[in-house]
Structures are given as structure tokens and as C-alpha cells.
Length: 391
Image 1 (tube, rainbow, N blue to C red):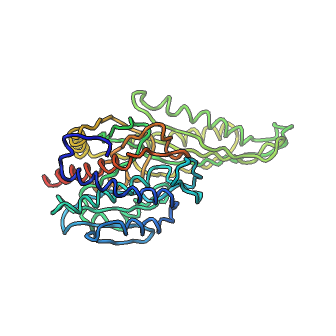
Image 2 (cartoon, one colour):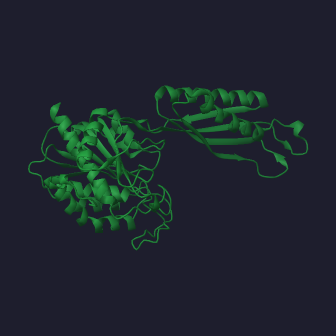
């Protein structure tokens, strides 16, 4: 750990400090051997081998690992994501990955931190409540590993009363934590618009129904949805990511395709933007004599932190002398799915801005990152145990 406070006298956190040092080699191994979404089998095997023998182990289809410490009864789960991104690492670290993949989102830190927490809780006799580890694949892709965990009935089978997540966040002060109650990550939806018109030679535009011009009008008009339909004291994001059309400089193409993302923090706002996007697409098509097909795919839901759990975690972090900040992001995380089946809290953990942005080829958390994430996870587990004990 990188700080000394009166709270370090707590035997659980004193033991955690030791275990964080013990997983340094594991962290570097995980960082150097990343596996992209759907190929996490080796990573799962490594984690299972690092856990104390007192944990039961179950592997499910799709590289899902479920581990448990403690007997029957209501449990607290901690999620650790295992997948990396298809990014060529450019950090220059001695333990940098060299296989064309990279833990550019901190999942290697999260996994090592979970192992440190698991070893710590195993040393508590008895643990406050059973601890369940969700070793989750495919957080970085649309085919969500969290949804597979829920479909498999894991939370019900393990009697999970609360799920704790922790995530590095470079946008947060490097020594700060955030467990803000309510929505903290946005719902993330994607859209694809296909516009079909009448092609023509570029010298004779009057013979065309210009799909590319219609696509351009759609891009401009769609940007007014947020600015003119969302309460300015709130927010939402609509971003166009691609426009695909044409193949030559002197031809008006027959078709154009536009894709993008929609990020919202409330369900009414989410539905309103979907509806307005359809209206804009149909209106643009009519104005340009084209035909359109708009498909909107609903992705991760809004990530809402349970208010009581978040407050309890915040009090415990403050008691340890840690700085707390309010933080919300229009990023998304499939951790949000767990909130549909149990109380859930995502704790954001700061890391120096010099480490780089998430998903950047230069992302390199500082040497204390594992300790900070482990502190967040253990604090979340203990706070949730207290809340569930009152229930």
C-alpha cells in the first residue's frame, strides 16, 4: 500500500498490505500475457492456481470462473474482468505484452487485486460472510460475459446479496476513490443507418437521389437531438463513429451507412433519443428522396450504484483517510447488468494522469495501483457484509 493511517491497525488491511506485495509477480505475469475477449482460458487457469485451497472452484462455458469461500448463506461477490484489448502495447515496461494484445483498461490490476483480497479474506476466521469471486470474460465486447454469468444463474445459486466492482480511472485524482450513489456509468447503445438512393455520375447530380448528401444531413441533424431535447442541467452523448459510402471521386453512390453510439443516464432519456433518432432519419430520407433502415442495438444498461452500499463504502474509505470524489462517466461497463439481480456498487480508483488514458497503447498504471484497487475491493466486501448482516 502507499499510505499509512490509523486504520492500518485493522488486521484485515494489515494482511492485505502483505498480500498486495505478494501478488506483484502475478500482476506482471498477467500484464505480459494478455488474452483478448473469448480467449481467456489461460488467464482463468492462472487465477485459479493462485487462489487459496479453501476456495471452491467452478468453471462454466465461455471461460467463466466462479470461486467461493465460506459455507451456505448470503454472500458478497467481487467481479474481476479477465479480457484484454487487441492493442499493440507501447509502454516500454520491462513486463510489456508482446503478443499484439494489451491490458489497456487495467484488468490485470483488477485481477491481481482480487487475488490479494481473496487471500486476505481466507485468513479471516471466520470471514464476515461468504466471498464469491466472479472471474469474468468478455467485458470489452458486446457479447457480454456479465450477461452469461446471469443467464447461468450464478447469483441465485451462490446466494449473492451484493456485487462489488472496482475500476482504475485516470480521470480521477490519483489518490482518490469514488463510490457515488445512483447512476455512474451510462447506458451504451449503438445504431446503424443505411440510406439508399439513386446513383448517378457526379457531373449529373440532378439524375440522383444523393444517399451521401442525405447521410451528411443526418449527421448534422442528429447532433441537435441532445442540444435541443435534453435538459441542459443533465446530459447525454450521441456520437457518429463512421460514415461509409462511395468508391470514386466522380460518382454519387447508391448507398451510405452511418454508425454511432448513444450514451444516456436515465431510461426516459434513452427512449427519447431513440425515438428522435428515428424521426430524424425518416425526415432526412423524405427530404432527399431516399429510403432508410435504422437499427438501434441496446447495449449495457445504466450502471447505478446502490445508495446504502455506496454510503457504507464511502464511510469506510474516509475512515482510512482516503480522499473521496464524486465521479460519473459516460463510459459503460457490463458490470451494470449485475445490478438487475443484486445490490451492486462500482468503486472508481484514481491513477495518475501520466499513466495515460484507458484503452490507450501507453496506459501504464503506477506501482501502487494494485494496492488501491485491492483496498477498494476489500472495503466494498466488508461494507456489504455489514449491510447484508443488518438485513
